[in-house]
Image 1: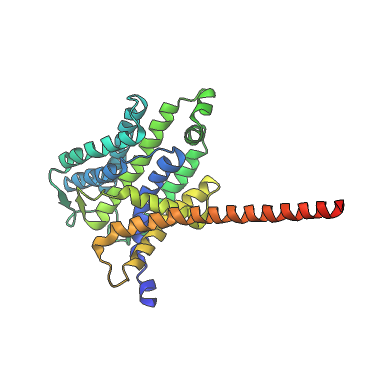
Image 2: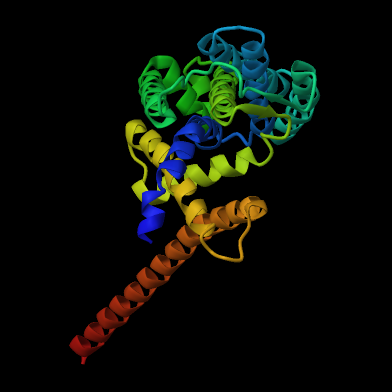
Length: 306
């Protein structure tokens, strides 16, 4: 156990690297209530853009910003398919995810690109410190944005589109904006992960949506929800907790590295089912309490009548 605690640097580092992706998933699934599967493609888009630019001599920080812009463009395309093309939200995400596979292959030119001999944003510093600063800045900027009029309109769009339209807001615009910011953060995460791991792979985005959901659900279950500041903090912490749980699962002798997706699926199932069971148990407990109180009241009424 002590040996595992001493090795927590790895899971924490991974948690911070994927925290930006989790924040992106939080925007679509929790704020917009939009099942966006573009994530699996835009994560790779960020990695592909950063990798190809860095290998062509572009400054790593500029390449990372370009990756963010590429992700935003992918999100805009998904938003346009849904709002202007009137295509179902889930189907819009699937279409873009499929399209991005070919686009990413075009960008990279081959299935994977090595960055082992290239400069990256981390330099000689420990990635934990760089990512901690990036995640904190990203989180605070997101919190500040959600307090603006446009941010409030975006949050209201996911709650009640009809109501926000009655106030004169354009829900198509807010939906597209939310999707672009979400996928921009996802692509940014893909870019930093590619630089930390020293390679970009065409299949690196597979299953990212499930990992993002797991981070959001775990964070909300542990820290709860409330203000925007608390919720985004919960998402970041959920990303770190998820990686620690996965690392702990690997300590089980019969589990292998190839079981990561299965472990992720099990974590998501548990995170979704446990709160539901707790709510059902509380409702039954409250129903029994009301029944007992009602019977007691009826007994007193009958006793008084006698």
